[in-house]
Image (cartoon, rainbow, N blue to C red):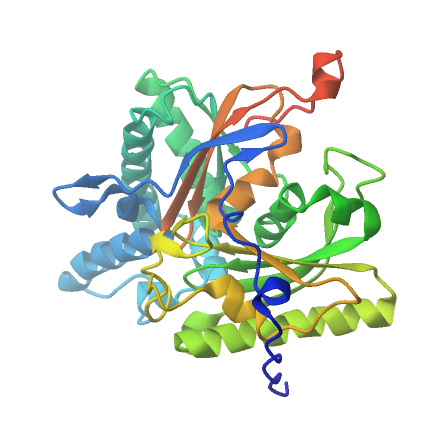
Length: 376
C-alpha cells in the first residue's frame, strides 16, 4: 500500500474531532456503569491472571515441569507460538496422552483463576448487580477457551454465584466493530448505509465496514460487517507512529472498496482502544499492551487518525473513540434486553472489562418484545 499523504490542516473549527464526546457512558438503552477496572492484589493486576497471555504462561510452566522428567509432550515450540488449532487438536484427541493430561491440567488451573477474577469483579460496586457476563476476546473462540468458560461457569455455581456466562453472538472479529452502530450520531444513521470502525488490541488491529441496516432493525440486531481486514501487529513490532499510519492505510482501503461497491459510507470513524478513555479522546491509563506511550499528553489518537484521512463527500469527518471492551459489549445490546444488569469480559492479550445497566427503550415501555441472550 502506498503511504497516504497527511491531510492539509484547515481551521480548527472545521478540522478536529468534536471535543468531550468520546468515552460516553449514557447511551440509548444502556448506561455504562464502569469499565477498564484495574483491581490489584499482591501479585499485581488481578485481570492479568485471567488473560490469554496468562493462559500461555501457565501452559509453559506446566511444560517446564514435564521437561525436567523427560521429553516435552507438546514439542519444542514455546507455548506462546502454538496455534489455537494445535492446542485444540491436543484437547480433542480421542486417545489419552501425556499432552492431553497437560492441557486438561492447565485448563483446570486457569478456570480457577478466571472464576476467582470474576468473583473479585462481582464484589465491585459497578458489578455487584450483574446477572449475566458475556465472554469475548479471542480466547473463547477456540475449543480450549470454550471448555475453560464452561468449567468456569460450573465453579461459579459451586461458589454460590448464580451469574450466567455467555459468549458473543457475533464473530469475535466483528463484535468490536459492530458495537459502533450504537455510538453513531442518529443523523448519520438515517442518511448513510454504513460506517467505518477500528478495533485496536494488544495483538491485532481490525478494521471494517459496518452496515447498520437501521431501517430493517432499529435495535441494530441485524447490523453486519460487510468487509473486514485484520493486521497482527504484534508480529511486526511497529512503533506508535507506524501503527497509526497502518490503521489509516486500512481505513482508506475500506473507503476505496465502498466507492467501488457504491456503499454510502458515513463520514464517521469509530475507534475502540484498550484503556480508560477521557471525554476529550485521550487515554488516561490501561494502554500498556500497545507499543509506545499511548497515554502521553502529546498524543491524541482520534486526531492522529483524522489527519491522515480524507473527507468523505461534503461532510466533515467525525472520529470518535471509546474503550474496546465497551464497544464489543455494545454489539450484544440487542440480545441483552431480558436482564437489567450485565457485563462483558474480553479475554485477549489482557483482560478487558465493562458493566452495563439497561435503560428502558420507548418500545419496551409500550410492551415491545425483547430479544433474549441464551446462556452458554
